[in-house]
Image 1: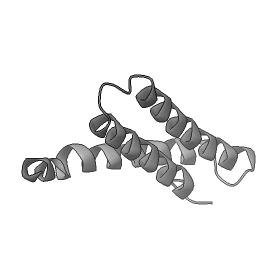
Image 2 (image 1 turned 30 degrees about the vertical axis):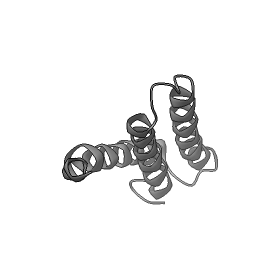
Image 3 (image 1 turned 180 degrees about the vertical axis):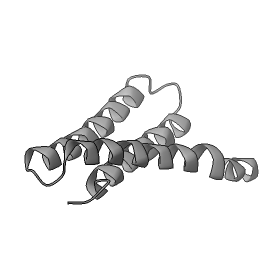
Image 4 (image 1 turned 60 degrees about the vertical axis):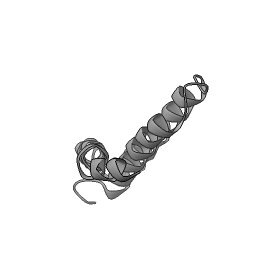
Length: 89
């Protein structure tokens, strides 16, 4: 058992990071594709955390904190650290 849950942190990070990437890269012509991809990645992250709870591998608080930490790191990387890269492209 770990605090925060490493699996939930990685799943939330991947879901938020990939969702933000798809929102910036895909054009407006893919109006249905964007929400579908974002929804599917977020649901997979939630499923990964819930399976940790159901299998008694992590406490619910560990998973919730893992989700928050992973999402916060992804938002930080995309919004603050990688904003410099957009200026050069």
